[in-house]
Amino acid sequence: MKFLVVGLGSMGKRRIRNLKRLNAGAIVGFDPRPDRRREVEQRYGIEVVADLDRSLGQSFLDAVVVSTPPDMHVEIARSALERGLHVFTEAGTSSEGMDALVALSKRRRLVAAPSCTMRFHPSVKKMHELVEGNAIGKVLAFTHHAGQYLPDWHPAEDYRKFYVSRRKTGACREIVPFELTWLNWLMGAQPELVTGLRGKVSTLDCDIDDLYHTLLRYPGGALCHLQVDAIAQPAVRATRLIGQTGTIEWVAAANAVRVYNAAAKTWTDYPEPEPMVEPGYSEMSPEGMYVDEMAAFAAACRGERPYPYSFDEDMRCLEVLYAAERAADGKSQVELPRA
Image (cartoon, rainbow, N blue to C red; front, side, top):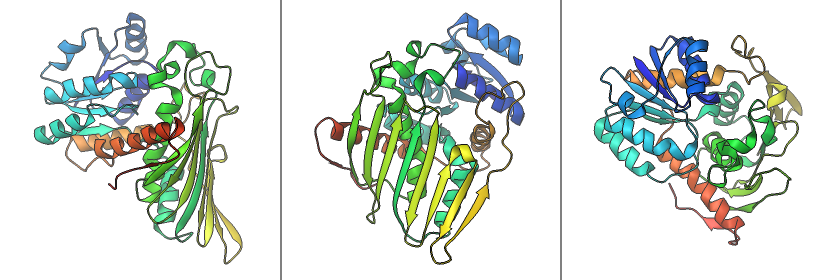
């Protein structure tokens, strides 16, 4: 196979490393910035191009990985699908045009794969296994906090100069649906009721809401709380699921899931395996879940197995984001249509 990686920033470079580790095939990189093209060509030894339309039209391409700012995903993905290419996109913030992508991919029998990175995280997979295995009985509630101080996202880059500091593609707007891709998977459903608050509470030098408090009710009655922010120091990702017969806890920094059995009054720990870290990138988050995600995309392109997440599901996660924003802007709660 031959892949075109569109966008050679932090995530584009990560996807190149993922594909190279997998020996998935030849890789070409595109970015409008000459400095990024030079860096990628020198660091990874791949072909780089400066003309996206011309590159998408090459008959030797099989698949496109879209690692641009979120507001560019749909347009590039549509162009790729129209040319008969499979497509993967990073996490998005807008569902506009996604229904057309779904229809086009089905009509052309092509893979259209939105990112669901956290579903490949070993602790998330363990929590899903535990919930499915009834380890804590019926889930009654969860609280989840995902936060990181915005200047720490890309320490080598001025946070004010990339998409997370723009209102349309702001950091929290991206992370709310990013977390919902796996939280909804754990709950086995889309929320049916949404309410909450959002706002700018810090002195960050950008026009975004840097804190979202979102309350969710799921079918069956579970009442849940999601906090996403761009202010937490140090970074945090922490989850607590309360069930009929016990509790599941996960703090990402602890690298383990803990389960409390109420009947036995005991805790059981499930440590994560040793993380995969790319040579020279020890300061970055472990790469294993990203590698597994690219492996799933490549396998779907080869027709070996379906990709585990769809644009239909992604649109439903984005509906929750929009409902949370509408509720925060004046409506006390927003009911969502049943999936």
